[in-house]
Image 1 (tube, rainbow, N blue to C red):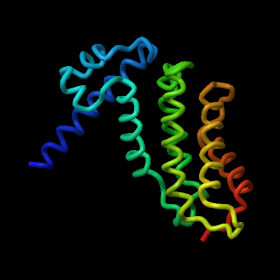
Image 2 (tube, rainbow, N blue to C red):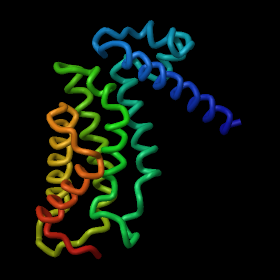
Image 3 (tube, rainbow, N blue to C red):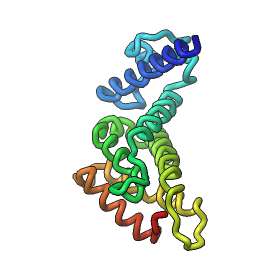
Image 4 (cartoon, rainbow, N blue to C red):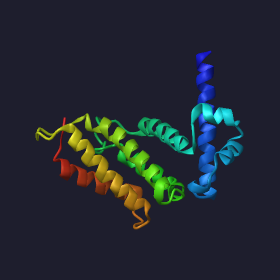
Length: 188
């Protein structure tokens, strides 16, 4: 019975997330209402509020779901051909695929929300990758985590802003090189 409930919850959350994505392809985040999300997802108001108290929480839920998806497709840091921080390329590819969605958030409060969620996503993914690295440099791991997270998030914000047309693989290679030099890492 629990498996059925979990599947229903997953289906409902996927419907809500899908509705928000479809709406973001047509209009700015600030102009989207909860009623439009309900209509697009074909769910009732009480169902929506059982999962989220507002559309900002739906964005947060969407990022939690995205974290799970990206974690599943991130290569193991132990594989021979894995980059220093394997989480980066799947994140960049996702953003490239959905660039128009992130642009729909614009600036202001909505832009802050999306950058905050993006930073949290990067922080959690980077934490997993950095566990596998040793430097022997005496710098606390939390400092390294904040360094990687801040640098990568700033790089993504700049890239999403459309200031460059770098391919995801090129941006990842540049980030990996900068991170390797910045962290002076020796892989365990």
